[in-house]
Length: 147
Image 1 (cartoon, one colour):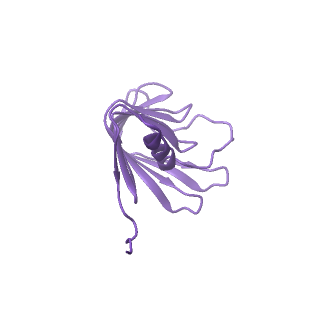
Image 2 (cartoon, rainbow, N blue to C red):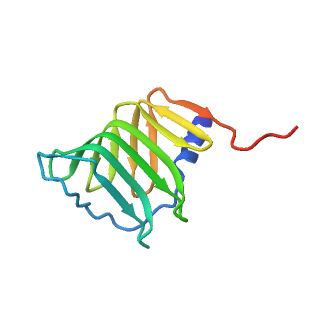
Image 3 (cartoon, helix red, strand yellow):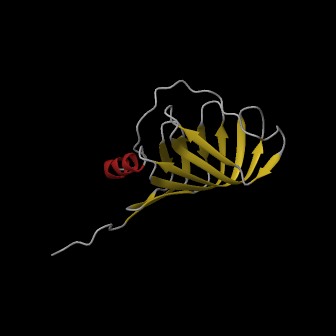
């Protein structure tokens, strides 16, 4: 990956880092069971919604791991406005570290860019991540260019 793509990915995942200690998340899924249509919000220390996980199917493998099918992640800026979405067909979420991993193609969308990669590691608390594998970037104009 060249430096331009690295900078673009950093831009896609830019966020304010939270220094709060991580607490294990509690989700309403029993170990060894599925749930349909699970919504997991993550809030800032001030109580603002930062990230929302929407799942089609969530399977709790053990005390700390969810296997998620058809995941959509929405992140929000400090004013509560939508920042980006991440779509992943199959992923794993660690409830203790709040880290999401996927080895299936993932798409990240913002108004000005769409990035697709083969693998993802995403820190939900920091709203930062890394795409690897074959990464494709599509840039969009958000304003008309005047001659």
